[in-house]
Image (cartoon, rainbow, N blue to C red; front, side, top):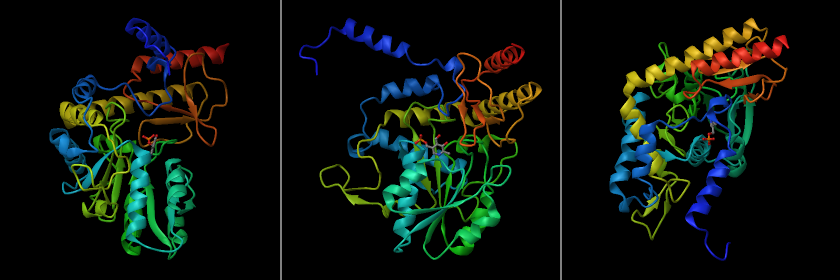
Length: 367
Ligand code: PLP
């Protein structure tokens, strides 16, 4: 701790120097987050000091959270869905498994989960004392449905399906998983942290949401394709009462019980998330998603002309390539667990950026 406080000018010159050390979005191709939409920033600034952890103090902000869940429930074909705003996919996945564990009490719980699942499930299972029974992916990097039944046993408390996988952008056959969940009377959590705000806006969306009776809960992140400020995730549950299974007493707050994982929770990013959805409307979101998908397809075609074949044909805007050569200077891409080059065509990734990246790739090839 500094003994004497800094002058404001000195402080902000230090902060802006540090900010200048951050990478610039004009070259970031590896992130599932993006530059927030200006209306999200404006709304966020209006709600800076609001705390959804004590909703009685902020009833207006709390009603925005309910509206956000209503909008997402409507989008996912179930207006009566329950839910709340989380800090992101990690928290939503943890909470979904907490509900499944509270619903089915067994001595040695396990969860049947795709090989392609996000690492947040490892954290969730570690914290909750749940064993992960991993189901391998098929050649297209979707969960091999034929292997799901064999992985279920009497200690299985939940199935997980992925709608928009982190590394390959694939949507599992959620219809088949939902049918198995119904037959086996199991909780099915769909991790749509990324795909939840892409799939509904595709011209021919694969089924993945509450329209399938076997789906119990869905994770979706407005801070990814929803272009909100950070942190903004959401967990939706088919029956609002499911959340009550997580209730603990909170004697000194304006509410006497809470089911959330975090205590203090930002209202600002919830306002930001709702602002984007309401400002864009379905038409606006369809246009954003169409742009991202167009860029994804252009990138795949372009990379293939340079001899970098796609690893899979993605369902959402994540492109992966068999390419073990270095990436052109200044560009940031990532690598999957299997070593494929991975690029996410987020809203900040413009058509011009894709063309520039392809030109740079071409120059590297000819060098
Ligand atoms: N689930 C999926 C499918 C993801 O892609 C991610 C992050 O990329 C997460 C969960 C974790 O989300 P967060 O980092 O917001 O906790």
